[in-house]
Amino acid sequence: VNEDDEEDEEDEVASVVAGETLEPRRRRRQGQFSGYWKMASCDNYAGYLEAIRIGAVTRRLVLRAPAYQTISLRGAELEITLKTIVAVKTVCAVGGPATKSQVRNQEFEDRAFWDDNDTLVVVKKNLTRGYELTVKRTLTTDDSITVNTRVKDLKGNRPDADFRQIFNRVTTPATK
Image (cartoon, rainbow, N blue to C red; front, side):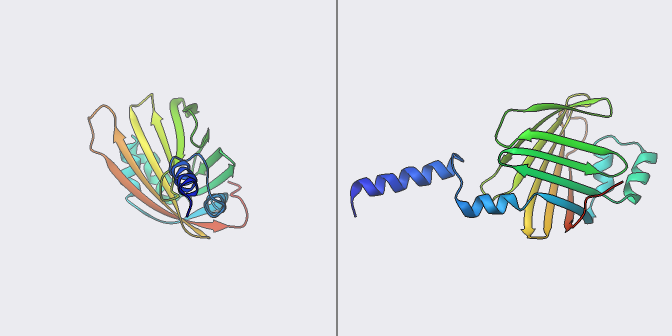
């Protein structure tokens, strides 16, 4: 084996680890996130809603409503729309700078990146109410996504809250 070949191989591995390039298998897997998804189950939804300061009446309505998400991932361009009784949209470039968004008169700062396990991580910081959501979406099968969310109170007034959802792929988008 030639020493130059070994150096080229090490450079290639380093660039993949640094996220500069993705091998075809990883690109295909990440592309499978795109589609329409319906929530099949959740753990600690009420605790999550309380942690993001949703009032009791609205919490009861949200807990009874179905939840859908639409994920569109084209290259680095990511758009996620989560629909329950309200729609929340996140649009940003994966690996790019943070972008600003508005949800019901609240300002957010959004950023997204891939971690080392092909998990799509979206950090959504509420600049109005002072909390941060870290949402990790993992493709568990071709037709199932596990979503783990952590709410962190940036002011230190409330304990962190964790929330877990399972979404299954559906063939048509949610219309309501």
